[in-house]
Image (cartoon, rainbow, N blue to C red; front, side):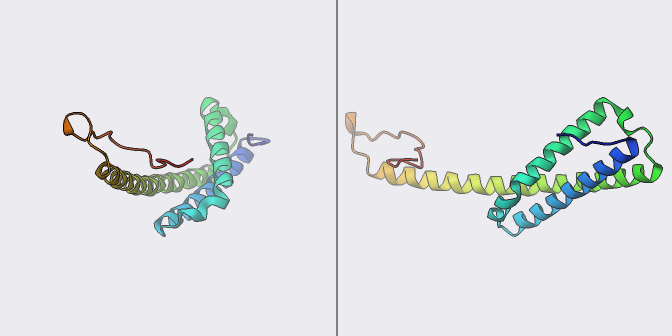
Length: 146
């Protein structure tokens, strides 16, 4: 899974198209997260994963062998540099929205687990020496098959 280019300029144009496409995907996903509708990403997540893997592999190849971009025109170089800068900005913003969604989700799960644990402890019978024992956090699937 790599770009198939004839020369450095061709590789730069293909990498530019990949960078723009992946950046557009990230922009769309940012909008979806900010609209609080992450479930809308389900149908497109595999393509995003494929594009990001291709991008990662191709940039690693170029980093290991910069001569792959030899012969790139100044116009292609400028366009690739600009697209990469925009992609990096979107990637940084994407990181923030994903971390925010993760924090909210973890908070909800922790609150539900704490509430369930409180409810379960209220029904705990007394043990040795007339004390109840707190078993700590419980599984959310307590008494249920996962």
